[in-house]
Image 1 (cartoon, rainbow, N blue to C red):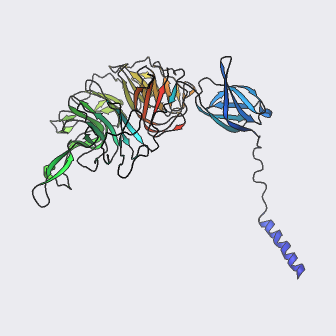
Image 2 (cartoon, one colour; image 1 turned 120 degrees about the vertical axis):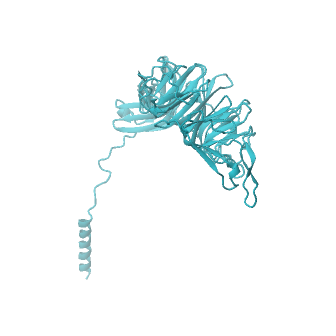
Image 3 (tube, helix red, strand yellow; image 1 turned 90 degrees about the vertical axis):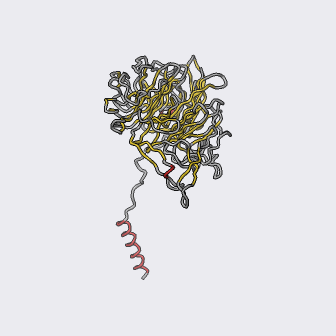
Length: 524
């Protein structure tokens, strides 16, 4: 019996071994660890014969000292010395803030971040918003305060049930929430554009149809000086009698669609966006719960009087009772000139039936201005246009490679009359595109996008150029930028140096997490 059990047990083991063979070491054949290790997050920087030398604490390098390569933010650095515990490198020309990387053969070791000191830095005096926000515009007020609008339901984690923050907030000059606004529940949709009228009131546009629980608006409305809705008491049809009353928005005019920009010129309101109808309410035929809305076909461009009534002489053919033909592609941005003419940019190639390759100018009559010298325009989409009142120049950014016969990848400077200023000669851009550019009063140009390199130098989404297109020395020290910029507001710090408040859907600046807005200072 015992012998039989023993035999059976032996057969069982043999069977198991046959059916489930023990595999070889699953890690066999892997790369042998080299024993290299960064031992400190701190580096030592010193000037030697006019060159910047940086020493990092690393162990295990000596056996491989002739195989080592070292990078600062993806820019290779020359190695001057390797010891048992350190590696010393020369700071590479053009390098910017970022991580360090050590490569031996095909093995990579990630080291500490290295911060490059330069003329651009995040302004620590500006509020750091900890709540997600997409800020579309920053409007400075005469008293120094700022009105920020966009798509957000909180700001600096200050929103409460009793005091919500929805798409509009008043801050002081440093971005901290301040008193003075009575927005109530705010807007129920994004606000993409805001302007201040001569009497201190505001016009806002976006996707809102409700403000502080008051209706009577279609993507645009007017606010009082304290941020409350400009409202009126109107007579409507009652349920049990012929008369009843309701409180609605005073400004009775809007659009069926999305408002991108709102402008004011000669006591008229101009609206640019993605819409196909003008809308107005007929309260005399409405009840409190059911408002009657009248629609008039109109495309992308609208002029109204200060009460919201559509101006049928603008972008509208009275003879046919139809709007003029819209562009065959979306409008991405718009600017109003001092004479009331509006420059439109986007992805369209025709506008009002005329050839208009991604840019056109609309005259004060609402028709394409044939005198605007855009020529062949851009060969691909234009995403943004900005204007510097100091230099009198426009900056046009996008995905194009050619503008009116001038070869330029993603950025072109235009004179006041719309002709190309060829003094801005862009260098080679790699790894992405330019989405927006802004010229400071001192002439330097802030450039944003998804690019990775400029003129062979690592620049991750943000760079500062001279007016001729070269990288501004000392101003390109910052690390990675990530986001889409909607607005830039220039001011000065207490020392008189320029600052730029950058707003948009932004998540990273100089490798630091931000939300919606960040202010940078630019030292001389």
